[in-house]
Length: 448
Image 1: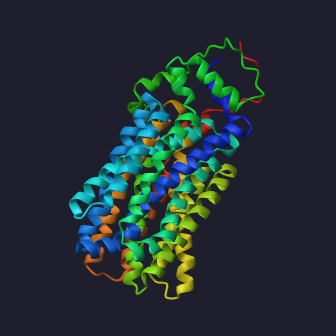
Image 2 (image 1 turned 90 degrees about the vertical axis):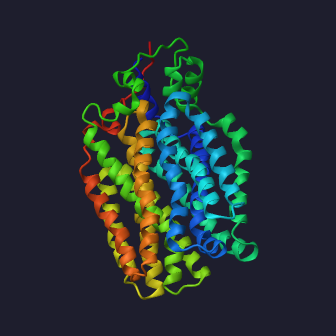
Image 3 (image 1 turned 180 degrees about the vertical axis):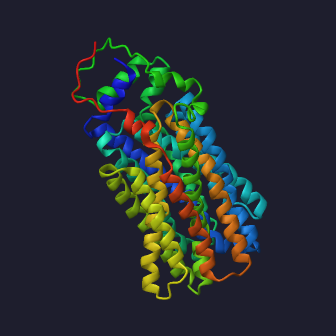
């Protein structure tokens, strides 16, 4: 059996218990990741007051984790294609949990920034690995929805921060919201025991019994021959140079445009994650009201991710993604001019759906665009290079806040990124996408 046929067999599988296990762990891991990232934005006003720092310094502190995420996404995404996704996920959880918790012990901006940078390595590294794992095992007809459902966990983490942040900060200060992030370390033994390894990785390493056991769980009704041998597909041979392969076979322009789209999406997401609470406070809202906006933003993101995943499975995901970027642009510009609190809540909901929700959909798009042998690398580089936008966002908005510009100009600056992202997505060529080239075989047949 050719490896491409095995991929097609998995793509036509029915959703079952083993798919649910991968989906469960993907959601849990992204909940942790979302909490670890959103916690700084919620605690930032209290940190600024406690450390006596201005908006420019606070913007740099918020960006420190994003620098780490940039390097983490690139390095761990590539590492996962070499040492396996399960080990890589565990390393990332250790980093993001231990060093986010340690950030609560910091009493100066430099120490805080260093700890957040190291935590960012894990926060950024886990995203492309989980995305690639979900894309590899998901049935083709559900792939977009399953990936966006996993990334909805990202927003759930933000919701949890918004719900508990106010109570913890007002009662005990900002430090405890960081301390609780040490708890996920306790999950590592369970992840090692139940999270499956990448099938492509197991085939590459010659671990035949392990990949066959995984395939039997994913496709239990298929008569898998115990003596089955896999003939590597042509695309499997490119895995020896996964980074350069991102530009082979006509993928060059599309890879660059995916990087631009990710950069613009992450610019919007992290500008809002870091500064939404503070911007709402500048507009005259109390801490409690500002955190309510954060809550609505993340609920909107969950809705947008799930709706986008459903639309992406029914229609061309490229055009669904471009439409979401465009809606985000309009919503962000409108946000600066809303004068009614009720209308502002509605707009913030749409902004969440069309910024963070859009970015979650972008991961699903990238997960379907690259072949499985370089999928972690492709998503990792898109996420890592895209972090340049994430790093720039909080720092730029912090600088604009320090200039005391009108509120609408801050939101307009964020909205420009959505317009650029729309153009970039429309320029992506889908003819080499894995979703197009990995056709589902009409009927599974016993292999010889």
